Image (cartoon, rainbow, N blue to C red):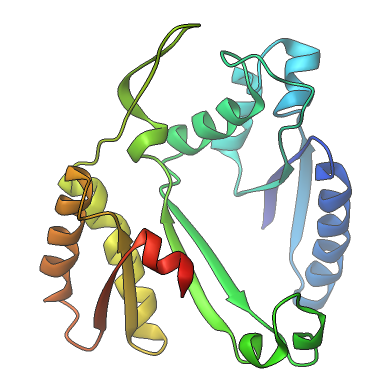
Length: 222
């Protein structure tokens, strides 16, 4: 079997990052004996410069057909039109492919703790996973508008949108140390009140996981 991988270098350091990733991919494919082919497409600001939009239908369709997508980076000070920004291509890609779960492992490998700007004893042993919802909330809520006098964004979540990302987080927690911290703004935002309610309900399905709630302000200080 040959895997079809779409490569989106993007902007800024994106092409450099992607080239390094492709070099690693070649090493990994040789070690684990699998085949792949790379299909390159412009994305983000580079796509705006060439095609006038951050994500063309051709690129989107290629991503839909692909087995995997490798993205470098997008955005930069060159692209300032609020109605046609590189980041809008990323949001459209997430929504179109239903990529609702952003999973970010955070570990400090042995020997690297001395390289951190934080105190070495504070970062040694760091091992956590951040799970972030990607296709709902304030990035996608309606109505929204922008003009020179007023701007509006809407923060909305449905129960179903919260449940699916919460299940992802609980399953990860259950496979690790059995601890989950849910971060919200429940003391102010209606959407966070629903978020916390759903987390507590779903937690009943994962008795092996200990749940802790933190307000986002407090979380930033931990």
